[in-house]
Amino acid sequence: MTLRFLGTTSEVGECPTLYEVAETGDIVVQGERLTDPEHLKQLRDVKDSETFVVVPRELLTRFAPKE
Image 1: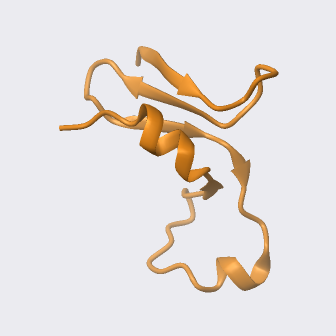
Image 2: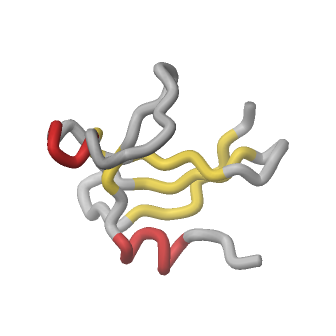
């Protein structure tokens, strides 16, 4: 898998960050893990292999690919 950096709203080289998988065009999101139990119980159809991260809206509106 080859990742292509799309952008970040971080000024210090940390998360949040967006990447694109070169081979598929899928998006990889780096961010703070969602851990609040009240928030987690509101999610649906969660697989054991899945995790959730919080992404600032600005990151998506500025750097997410538009089709």
